Image 1 (cartoon, one colour):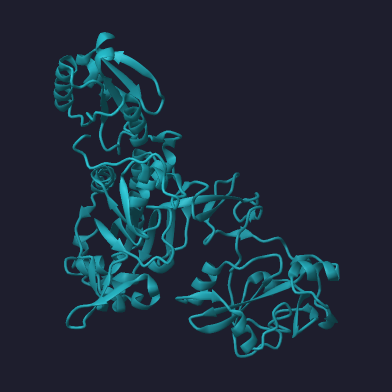
Image 2 (tube, helix red, strand yellow; image 1 turned 120 degrees about the vertical axis):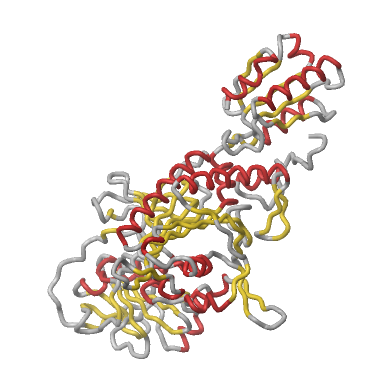
Length: 561
């Protein structure tokens, strides 16, 4: 350690909020260059490489083949897939000296598809899964949590190419199982949840989520049947509408009533007997959304339904310019705007809606008779306590951190990029693709979140920067120096790596740094331990200590790991 470029900190910088961020900085594993940009020190880099090694081992184990693609992508590829527009401001764009456009790859569906298109010709070339562990770039508006959300990061992204959906199911299952093993080996407890495919697109996707109060994702869980989904994707069974026969629409004064709760109380009805109006702008076009008053809009579901790049709540100036009456608006008589409705608003009878006039509402409005939606689609947001769509039990809400994501892409990219194969009869078909990603730096952060205590990190042995931390006391004494030489030789023969604290600092400082850095096994070698018969061994996770003979230390270290 006297030669290692490493500076530990007693206190974490004030900007660090997550425990992993604090400990990464205090243990000297990373240094911040700017928001969302981190440099890894030699100690931190060893951890990152260990994580990559686990990922590489499991991907190779399912027959995936490692490749490497350029980080710099020609914009034409992204225009060909259509994502030059849909990725929006997330893309880092640049031009070369000849003004040719490029992007820094945030992911590599396009590039990997192009590579495959040059090598896949026949069904005999399939199935094939290609992967890389490569740098990615995303212009995140709000980098956070140290390594949790970065602008430059390392991703393992894999892509399978198959002849048909059934074959894809097999590739998808193999990647899924590999992910289960990866997270187990790395010491991160995860649960699989149904997820939205986002800008990548595709037919089906699942996230592997580490449940933590500091997670940025909201997860809906069913304690009875085990259903789990990201809030962006979660389905639920809305409470039944109040049964009624259609009655004539009636205008009624509702002075001062601007909220659903207030309106329901004023009229002496339930919130589920009202219809809520919500205004959005989707790709610069105004959109009117109608949903039953007791429900909320899931903006991701709305964005997907509209096939829009951007969906944002309408600002007050636009609301006024369009003549919308906030708090008293409805789709009755609405023209000039696209109307999107949740089934809850179209299937219920006699709902109270705004009269598009300040201080007035309409009783007994009915879809089809009094207003008509341009698009009816499930856009409700699942919340804690809502009924599980599968078994009816009350859903629970937890926070979580996405650790990995698997997608069934289908032919979205193979058709646009031209990844085709000839079947047995010579007929050409697009390959059916899958996509599988893991953020490596985020995984390092999650490992720390799941493995630490008040004193510092507790690395699982599989990802620890070294196998053994040797604290040397009074190393200038000949007996200690001789014993250290013997110990290091024994560890090397046992193929165990050691971080040796040979600094002239006090024992207290050395022990604190050892706990902070968190290597699983700590040896303490000094005059006192030699007097007791050898070397003191301490388990970082349990705190258990003992003394073993010097000749047995390497074997004890291997057992303790």
